[in-house]
Length: 247
Image 1 (cartoon, rainbow, N blue to C red):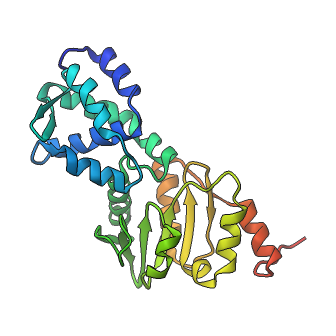
Image 2 (image 1 turned 180 degrees about the horizontal axis):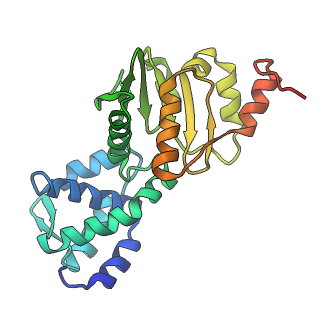
Image 3 (image 1 turned 60 degrees about the vertical axis):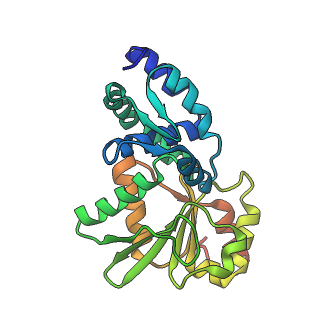
């Protein structure tokens, strides 16, 4: 394991920020394929998910002998790969759900949902390509239903919404009222977009699509994570007359 033992490696990994952990996971994936990663390309990909500073993890990891630098390419040292993968495997699952829209294991989360659908005989991942100009979108299909899961959705991209329901994994602000008001004010958003805050455990969604339910089952079965309707969203629906609550 390079220049450090297992305990030292664990302390080093625990000290990494989210971008550093995302970079490590990229390196583990690369080790299963071609072995090396172009650092600049990896930084660009991680930045597209809202994370910057991955390069800052390279020097301490290289100094500890965990990874090696070969020009513009980086790779995990063979002697460290198994232990790094083991550590990530025992820590990243709960962490990536807690972080929600972070870059950490976003691809693994999407692959996990695709595998869940195939394993339960419910459906399949259709495409991991950008959908309708929206970066990071992954399309899923079940019977006649489709949806795209996004790591975020900028208001500037609302005019580019493809003709498919969108499940957006995002951290809702501490004050959910503006987001709730925006959703309720737009019938387009309300009928086609659901906001899921995996960190806060809440959701803003009235989209009628069984794939949304299946995604919640996936979170429940794989991560013991359950989402509750946002109180602000429910209040906004009631105030707008779109929802009637029994008294």
